[in-house]
Length: 150
Image 1 (spheres, one colour):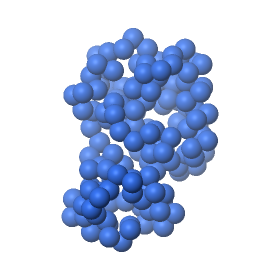
Image 2 (cartoon, rainbow, N blue to C red):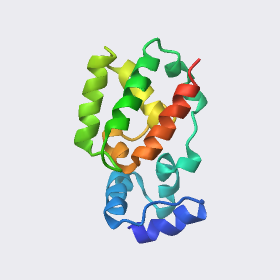
Image 3 (spheres, helix red, strand yellow):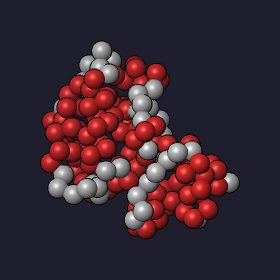
């Protein structure tokens, strides 16, 4: 499947890791949402740093009173990760730490984190997509989200 969607991703100017494990994991996350190979392009955009931006639909979640605490805690905990990519278990642990440290839950927790990871409030489950984005990229993205705070 990767070999069939790769030309579409490349035609869209996207570059991704050459590691087969990464490719297989990414395909596994998105394959159920693809009907034709070119459907991969909008799905994989959330993984491409060049395509990352804070979308207008995210503004309301950046205005939530607790968003700054969520993003700062996320940033600090991602910094502590010792590997290039975090695991699903790392993500769940960090999510629980943020819940406790920032004293938030529900959409006040998930939406700011989602904005910091994919730039918009809706999309693929974070626990599935975060392990596909490098620590360096996650940090870059959260700094962009923090700068976008009102």
